[in-house]
Every structure is written in structure tokens, then in C-alpha cells.
Length: 270
Image (tube, rainbow, N blue to C red):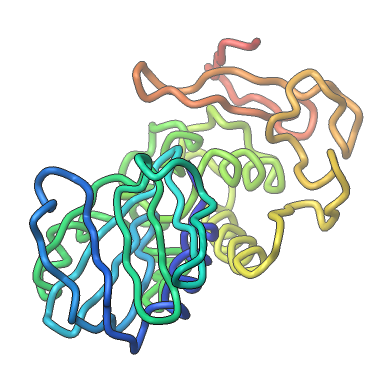
């Protein structure tokens, strides 16, 4: 699933192409919205909320979309050939006289009055890239379940919105925290939350994500996707294991030396 900074950048690009322009083409290719007519309405803004994309219209409606694991929005000049995949994979098309934005395999397409956006995203925790970011509230939510493994807590968008599996692994490495550490046992939890905020902001406009400061192949991540390879800091082989119960388990990566396990943490190492 895309990280929050990827979704933020997608929203910014969609906003540049659509905001302030009237839709001359609007197709929502899902059964529940197939007959909806949006052409003639103007887009006022496109914003991200966690990993949700909200396209707001001057009619007082908001279109929500979500990328999940396989979705993407591609932007092309109006009249040009689409480049994101086969036409049958396009679930949404929003176009004006200059640009066409094509949503390939986008999910959760929903249309609601803008004033009711909270029904779609109100459950989310503080948005790491949002204008209303609230670090103390994020810490409070993490501590609300002190026995919950920090690796799982960081991925819960109800706790804080924007962290995916890559940032989970990298942030915990940078703070020297084992993924199975209970949230209440994490030393200086506010520092971890602050680091998450800073790292996502540093990467939100970058062409490629990096947590190491390097964009050289194989050097942009400390531990993510590096199970069995030497830690870039100490040389210890990076460990990997599934974390969480099925069907919501996600792979975790960590350095056993830089992120020593806490008592009673028993990950299934692969």
C-alpha cells in the first residue's frame, strides 16, 4: 500500500491538473456510480487525508478514492493516449480541456456531500502531512493500547494516518525500536512520532523515497526489504518476519543488533 507521502504527492498533482477547471469528462466506472453525472462541475481542490484522496467539486460534492495496493492516478494531456494500463482497468476518468486524470484500479470510490466527508475519513488519526497535524494526539492514541506491538500500532490509520509498511520498518530502525515492542514500552514515544512527521515531510516532494540520505540502488532503505542482507549500519543480517494475525499480517524488517528485542517478544523469523 502506498505511503502517505506518495498519496500526498498524488493529490498535489491531481490538484494542479484539475483545480479551478470545469470537468468536460467525468466517468466513474463502478456499478454504484456508473450513472452519476459530474461533467459541467468545477473541481475546487484535491487533497489527501491519510491515504484517502478527496476531490472536491463546486457543487458541494466530494469524490473519495483510495489507491490501496494496486491503484494509481495517471495524468495525460487531453486527447493523448493513456499510459497507465489497459482501458478496462480505468475505474475513474476526470478530464477538462487541458488534462485527463485516469484512475487505474482505484478503490473505494464514493461520492458524498463535502460537509459529510467525516463519514469517510473521520475515523482516521492525526494526518502526518495534514495541516491539522497533532503530535500529542498521535502519542495519546498510541498509548491508548500500551500492550499493542508498536509495529502494528504504527500501521493503524486510526492511530496516526500516513505510515505504511516501509516507513514502519525504517522509523523503528532509526529509533532503535524492535517491531514487537509494546507501544507503552517504547522509549521516548514522542520522539518516534516527531521523526515520522519529519521523514514524511522530507520525502513528500522527492522523486524517490529515501530514509538513509542516499538514492543509490540498494542504499535508500536501512532494513526494508533487506531480510538476510547486512545491516547498513552494523553489518548484522537483517531479520524478517510476518507481524499481525491473518489476514492482516504484514512483513516486518529489523536489525537484531540495532533493534534488540524486548522481553517476551517472540517474532517468527524467516
